[in-house]
Length: 625
Image (tube, rainbow, N blue to C red; front, side):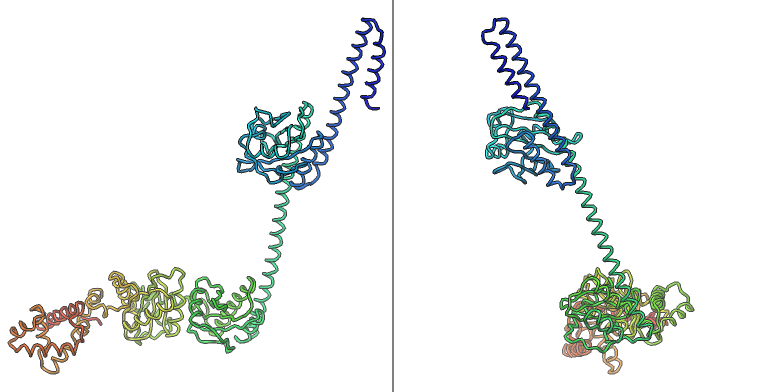
């Protein structure tokens, strides 16, 4: 039976006893009546506490379920609302960055207080809850003056029509995770039991929220581990497939298959056509690949060489260097209409490696031999300390006949950070039966030929066109023995440095073409060669015709280039001097009086006179061997 009805019956009995009672009897009845009402209040309070505690225990039981964070917060809001029989409840969680709190769940709302609403943490009831780490409440929010208001919170409360509001902290140890709010649309006071009950719910909610957050992080880690495991499985399966392809291609080579069969087999795997070229650009397979942009292929091939990986041209053709260590053996080209995934590009790399093995077997050349050849060439150009026997021994291992004239070229690309020049140089040396070495200051080439200047200009022109960047080239030679390679290398380097110092980056020159600068740069100045280059035709003409063009030139320069004064000094008619100067122009060219060539002519005349003077005294100027 409901406790209230029993109390009412007792009160009714006491009221009937009070009728006609004496004053003393009336006092006893009134006292009994007060005791009955107090007992009724205590029993009602006890009943409310038991009900609240039962609801709290039921809520705690429900919060132990494995909710995700969003669902958990919704359950907490709903439980808080019904626990006190109020109109609305909502939770806000503080942002990790600070400065605001975000509503994550709301129950009973009709307008503004909804999930995602952001509330500044400065000011407002929630800020007081966080600062005090204790409940804050008001019977009528709209008339409460002690609670600082914020535009966001005040507007939301007015829009929801709330009057009584209670906020309790979601507290976990010393940290405040957020605030749990309950509100009613009528003015009402909150009892101590209600505040205690909501505080307990807030503490339970904080524990459940932390648990849900940890569970979420654990689930995320599990998902990441599953993803990593899936990737590892995919990677293993991919590696297994690539190994099968590699084994299949290697077995084909070991069974004696030719290059055409090898690339046809690989082409079927990728749905395309492979073409193999040697370093000189010659096709080694006969399968036609129409529509190739050769200029584009050369440019991309140089870019692909440093990394040794397949690179796709803008036109959709794949290019991959065929390498034995750092030594290029050729280029692998794949024409296909299909887009390739990462595994298929690995198949291109595998095909290039197997092709390198095939070419090495076919040529009976090992990687060690290729490396030794390059090292031997480096020994020779840096061989100042080697004996003649050691130099001769190394020269034999180069498989290059140094008794035939060769020139030495040092080329320095001015802007080649990826090292594409090494690929071009290997191809260039291979085409011309020469040698290549990569030095810190540039690329060294030993090429058959007797004209160092012409070889340097050719290298500069073709190298610049291939790279798309200026290439500065110094050259020396010809050399016809291993003993002179080191000297030629140093001379070519000096020419390179001279061009740079003169601001002629991107140019090409040998010591002969540098004129008197070349004479100064040379270890063994070749005065005779310089004289012959500068005024040789004039000297030969005088010797053959018995003329005095050389004497006329000396007098002309000594008198400041005045033809009239020259005629007076030589005791000849001015017309005679004019005809002699015309003959000199025929012999030396129209530009012999330009500033640079004029200086070289004067130096050559002076050296020629000194040479004759020394010879007359029984000596001679040293000439290069």
